[in-house]
Image 1: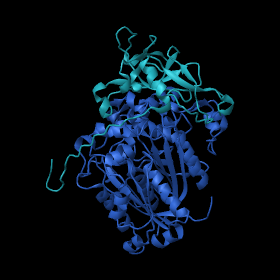
Image 2: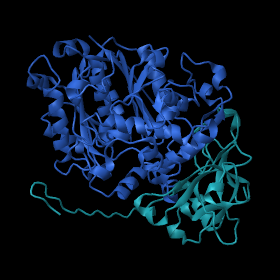
Image 3: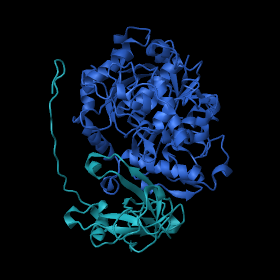
Image 4: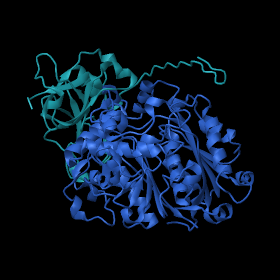
Length: 168
Length: 454
């Protein structure tokens, strides 16, 4: 495309990144095994909140006390609640073909979840699950994880999603 | 604070902003703004003599992805003829421009320079809007948030849902912000949505009503298209000088009284939700009472702790005790209508939870769905985003914080009629102005407080 004054050309640019998940790799391997794993730092006396801190998304190092965190907790069967949500009708290029979808943040019940409100998606019309209408979505409603079967070499945070665990 | 050098702004320039400025490269856009800064700001000596006195350059742009040119600061300094001066590139997401002004301030304040050009730009039109959204989304966590479908409008929307839940804010209150800012922009000829802007398209320009905002296309519940900021091409330039030099170069130098910045977690998901968190982080402003907030979860998903931190720093430096009583004109980062309301609270113009009440304080014609006055004074006192803000005027990311600073600078100089070609948006007799520049979901915020230096 060109006009008389401003010549416009196409300059494509493709990149593949060989990305490492580093010390939080067990989280992603966990998703492959249908598990949600978080890390926990139990140095509560060294935290400003004086609480044990759960990290979900996991962190390998605690931002409060700077300790290395070695302890993983399996949260798969824990109670989860909806902390907040939005219904996306538009998206970035990679997700345009999936709209509308429900983007959520998840609260893990029973922990100090100050650093732990995992971003995920909510599917409300899945076969064999409790189905609700978009206008029935409520902050605080119980939700539970489900897992997508993805080859390990292409696993991402999107390999887990949530469905309603109760009729609001 | 430190030495007694003071820093003043003596000139500002803008490009006309547009969805696409196909007629100019990035460096040509910066020159357009720089030419206005040097030649149209009533400098007291030959502008080229002023240019020869420049001894520091700050270049501000957000995204190497958008620009496809790394080390773009070198191109800009070269193109403006500012070699071999010291230079630095600043990047801080959406707050890039505000942080660049702060960096320019620091260069002068420290004595490393006496006269600094702060030049910012972004050209966002060379990729599709969806790809642009993706580039911006890559400024969120790319391991955990982006891969599940995260993008910025959705993050802000999730915040807005929680903000509504916590404080009972309404979509109508949010929409009123959209009406105010978009309609202000109709009197600002630099604004992308101004119907008279030669680059404007009919479907994305002109006045709007409450109904227009509420009925506009859904983007991410509860945000609609007219709740959202623009994506723009354009540039902005500010010239800062040591105060005694500034007085020799300008009849009306505007003194920078306070600067501040604050930060928060990269992931919105990781925002602390501790009860009394505001007091834990020592973020109470002088006019606030601890008992207001001792039981409030903070920052949670409803507030921008970085904005409060930046404001508190800037207010302390400027000696501001009660912002609503002391500040007359504000340009704040209205990425979304919800975040403008949230920011009223972070800046201390309203109590936490009462941002909606502040927008409701301006007389509104319910029948017509517009404010009774253009550029209404909130609480009868403060004018917020007279330029039209990011919703009405522009968001060419690296230029934004600088363009906001230029707007407040012209307001304090009472030169809005000269630069806008009409007096509608000129705030009467303004003494003190504030600029708020914001990144991510509040990962970085810069605040600048300025007043008349003459």
